[in-house]
Image (cartoon, rainbow, N blue to C red; front, side):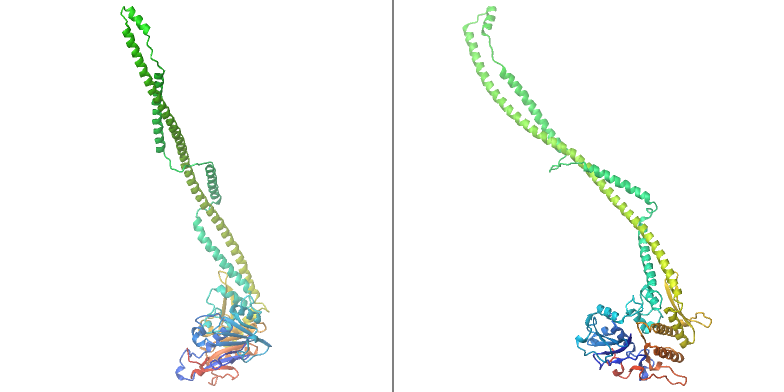
Length: 596
């Protein structure tokens, strides 16, 4: 993949830019002497790299210049044509206003302008962003680092000023090492999947270890004797079963109203009163019956005999008086008998009522006593129920702790297994590094090309290397050596570190020129801070690599151009300068509008 052209629907503001197969220079001329000492000139050198990145489907970011100044750029539509092979071109269309809708145009030859092509001529029109990335990925068909998306290696192909701080960790890769080191290992020709697996296992072990650290303090003293703990659970479970069995034997028929011992006592008092009344009534009835059974008898002949024996005269008048008395007594007796009979009848009625009341009270008393007995059982039931709830709660806690203990044991075993597995993977990574230094391996070729570029520019040996740190994670190093092969601190300075970054990018992408991969590199401000001899050597090395097929895009300020041995600034061929910028008016900017 190489860059073919970049243009927009507003050619008057952003003129078309066509790229060479080899060296492409974005040259900025500082024509106003007042700008010579400025660190940045705001002409658009770096902006071009951002624009290429945008067209290669960089995610939308509100801080990105096109969206940060959306009112200024909202009507722009950009087109980036890529050369994928001898007769394969794909043009990516992306509008600022609809940045998530992507269109793709395929052709067998380069097109100067597809902005006026009708919709039906496009292979894919206004495709959703993620789908467009999948389609473009398929069209690019990279044969290198295939398990990573195509945008991953673009970071090294588009190296900006912020990316010269570290050879390997780009400004775009400020995240965790596991997010970029496995890819870098693959990029260098190692087995990136092994490195990825090592990081994944380390992360997994860390998560498990964190879980153990959270769980273990909750089970202090319990995990020491799991069998004893299991015995305690067994006892509690048996107690629960026993209480449940007892409770299942209770049968309650509780009345609606609330009963108490006081109510039973009141019933007993009423029963006693009725019994006493019944006793008195029965005694009265007995007396009445005895009275009613008596008859008035008077033996007149006997009286006469008594009188005769006493030689007392018992005259007729006396007889008549006695007869009258008898008649009077008889009438009185009859009246009393009638009254007693009525009283007897009333007593019987009252006794019936008393018997009925006693029967009702007796039933009430029986029910009350039964309820009291049931109430005592209920109290027992409640006591058992409360105890059962407590036991079940305790048993649930114990069982949960047992589950946690089992889980803790599983976690510890899991940690052992993960650690063992990671040890094996780390061993495989170490072996892979060793085998990759043998002839015919990409890692070896990249290291040789890297050393060759550095030697050509600095006349010093340099080496790329990989080591494993104490945690078993891979570390990458790029070092400048002295003639004895000892690493020096020269690469600690910004100038040498920048050269190492450039040498690394050139070495990697040159190695993959015969692969279906990225065949261009963009270096922003590549000559800044270098001395003239190094600039000349670097430019010579760049042209050599361009002749081998590597497309290079560099941005340069004319004041940074190298000076030859005669004090003259080295000039680029007109064919190499694809865009000339200057500081005299808006026409010298990348976008021919006032600075934003």
